[in-house]
Length: 251
Image 1 (tube, rainbow, N blue to C red):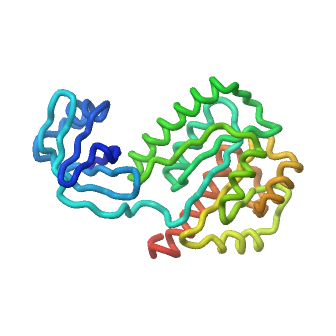
Image 2: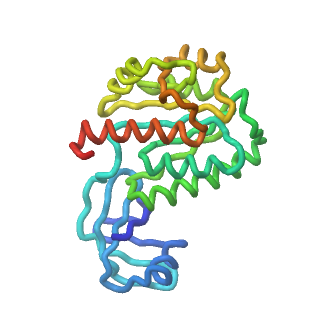
Image 3: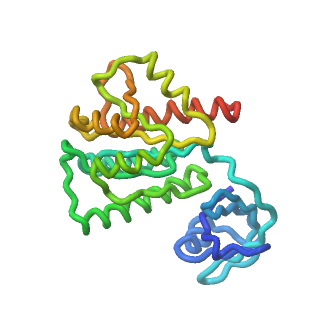
C-alpha cells in the first residue's frame, strides 16, 4: 500500500487532506482514483488506513478507515553523529541510516574533516539532507521522519551525546571484540544510544578521549578498516538485528 507523510494539522477525526507535491504523484504517477486505498502517517507514531474520497486539482481528500500505532520503529532511539565526509557521501549515509532505523543524524565537524562549510552553505546542505531523510522514510515505511540536525563541532556533539543513555565510538585501535559484544548487549528497549563515526582520516586520538570523557564506550568493527560511509551502516545493521530479534522475535 502506498504511504505518505501528512502533517497533524491536515488530519481530522475521520478525514485527512493531502496537498503539495504528493497530489501530483498520486494523480499522475501512481494514477490512483476514487476509492483507492492509501496509508498515511502523521510522523508522530500513528498510521492511518484511508480510502480516497475525492481528487481535486490541488488536493486529495481521504476518508480514514482505521488508525493504529506505527509498527516499523525501533524501540531504541539511535542518534548518528556522523563526521562530515567528502563529496556527496553524506547523502548516501543519511539515506541508508534512515532505512536502518536511525532517529536522528547529526553532521559533525572534526579535526580531520576535509569539508568546510560556512553557516549559509551548511544550512543549504542541511535542507537537502533533510529532504533525503524524508524520501528515505517514505520508501522504507518509517513512522517518523528522522531529523537531520545542524552541523556541530565535535565538542558540541559530545554535549548532545551526554543527554543519551549510551554512546559508542568505533575506533580502529580498539580490538576487544568480546567487550564490544558486551557493550552492544546493554542496549535495551526504551533507551537511547549515540554512535560516533569519524571522517575519511578517522578520529584523532584526542577526539576519541574527549568522547570517552563524555561517556562513549570504544567498540571494534572487526579487523578491517571500514570507510566512513560503511562504518555507521555496519553498526546500525548490527544494532537493528539485535534489537528487532530481542524485542519483536523477528530476524
